[in-house]
Length: 438
Image (cartoon, rainbow, N blue to C red):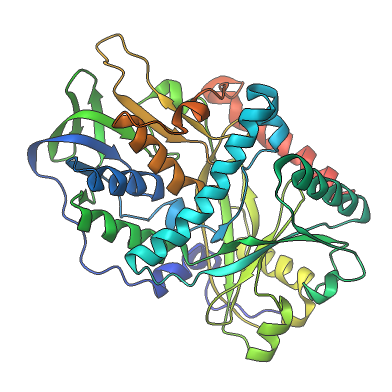
């Protein structure tokens, strides 16, 4: 059995990324009153990317982060940078039509290219590795995956390599999978190293970052006021990039997203031969179940494995034990390897799993100058960076894809503040049953 280093409670807070990405000095909190062109609420990848783009265009930018930069989903996720969206493309096709759906998909590929550009331009050492594998846990699902890959090639001009069931063990040394699809353009990286690299690039461009700076209230107007724990910011334009931490800042937006807990474990450093045998291509891997598993090798030969989710905001009981079971079920050859780190965090999902970008309407004292980016639905490592660029373009009046994404319609989760979470828990229990039955 896998040996555990600490208790479940300790491990749930023990993020391997924090151990391996030195932060350096903290960014100072905000004191007093300041004026700027753009105030950004949230120091994750979406907000930092927007800050970088806007500062490069000569605007004065303040980033207000309640905790630490990259301390949320941006710096704690599975590290997989993948083409497409969390929803299937037919969701986008139904709303926008085929031509604009192709434009949306093209933006997601541009998002992957943007990661490569920023790594090179800003010298960000974040362990980038090419390659992504989508794998199927049954023969029926393998057939659906192959049909999906053929459609992506024919409709979206995005060919990928199909892997038959007889060959999949050469790609992933696991008995669980019945087929797969390989995408060489997607890949994986160390998300906290990357996020901190974007933060440093934004400050070098002239943006000012503040940590420990919770925004308590927003007073909309031509010069919008943001009241923080220790000061006030007055800004011509505002970006809300808060993930699940909107609180009462924009209740209408908060109703359209739901926090989902996702959990990851990381093994000890494996013997190099064993590590190389698990995923010979060193690609990131994700199955196609609704309640899915995803995993990848790290640069120092660990296996990083995600797979538990919680739709109730409560950390699952026995988290470390169940993560250990999932690792061994997938790779029995790791039964004697230790788990050294395990942690969790929240992502924001929308009803249809499509991203939710837009601008709060003018009126009631507002001037239409408050933008928002949310609803990446666990698929945002690449898209958050591109979203920051798109919203920056919109703020300075440049043509871009922000308007295209803002046309996507979103509904509030049903059930109101008291019943929507129990309803989601019941719904996902049904999907878990369907996954179990194949």
